[in-house]
Image (cartoon, rainbow, N blue to C red; front, side, top):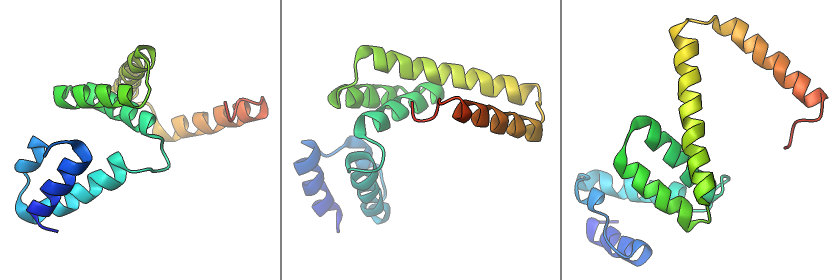
Length: 131
């Protein structure tokens, strides 16, 4: 598929040719568009709303204003409430904080892995799985 075909298909799918695709080299534009169609726009194991909330969280952590805008609006498009959007960003902040804490203090990974295993087993035993 050539760039003209991709531009046409993108316009039919998105309403416009995305400016970011103008900067992708010709030899790479086909696989990038295919990936976007399959993973970001297509039906996958993760529902679209959750993919957008994940994208928002990743964008917030990486402080990418383009992704923050794109995925906030994408999440809204797929039914996310303002509360869900705020929670996704807050969750990303909390997870980043714990990552900094554990890595910065050089917590023993093997001990941590055993702790996770015990905690998961306890929660399963007490009926927490599937919630």
